[in-house]
Length: 427
Image 1 (tube, rainbow, N blue to C red):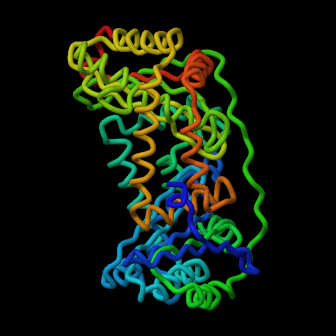
Image 2 (image 1 turned 45 degrees about the vertical axis):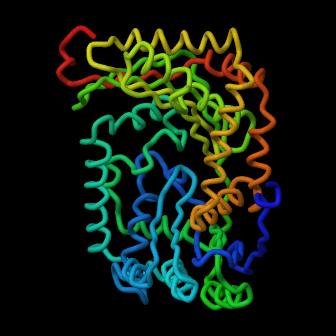
Image 3 (image 1 turned 60 degrees about the vertical axis):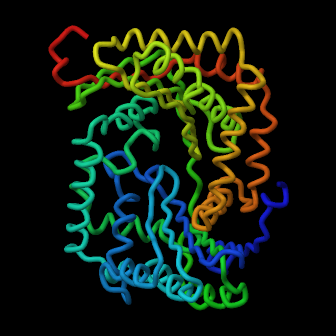
């Protein structure tokens, strides 16, 4: 197993600061190209949010030598797939293609890194602003439970903390984006010395190095960027919030500040989440869904980012059941865990579940390339698979009990999303 979890890779940095990680695997028929820009919504400012997510769209709108929408067309006609995503901390773009199209992908990625701005005009910006605003309406404003995390994070973090606003941005900020602001954001962050490029799968290392040098080596280095460092302020008391929405079933959220990615108790929270709500055998799921039949579903997870983390319990409530009863049962289950601890068998099931998901994620070359970029971003070591998995194998029963006592006794944000027809009733 240990050999399976070690990869042979080569990492080097171009003179312009671009990190390059090559991971050849001739056993796969495909090649993955994965680039992380170290910019996310956390790099924005209050009143100017949504830029990182906007560029997830703008980067597919054409560059100097690539007409609008042709990036998708070229890759899909080559038999590949592609996409991008944005988080608090990074924006990534990824493609999986047959090996003979590696040069095409590197040309496309380098052209938009170096030459996006010459093709960026007001018409394109206005078009994509409309697209993002519509996406926000569909996924946030008009979606059932769609505003939950915006409400939670804006209360979990102080206003100036960069995790306090939604990744997609606020509607008023998106509407007010200017071409000058968008250009400045791109010039600041979409630079080679703020990016890491992973090539994984079926390719020739020597050829890949030549292609990387050919297409990225001449791109000018940008200004040196400093790391973000603001820390979240601990809550002084629980925050109890109610939001009325167009939903059929009430839902209740409990969210605590926890630990950043790969630091402190981060991995222990993953295990605690699995024990409480990770499967049909988990404590909250068995109690609320199967035994008492008062909940439709239970979800528990640890969300880990660079500056902070948060631990959440989410329960969708069956009709006619009081949210107060759900809250009572949730904290009763937490109290039992705090007082009685967890069994060895229970902990092993959680470990096995995490290990199984971990191993499964390594079967896909695209996911593998993204994980390599993730490890490089957070740990500065692309081959951290074994380290990552072993963190979970060494966790003890008492450690899970201790973090539950330590963190879940702290103030938290509680959000109740209730059907609008309950708005004028006694809740």
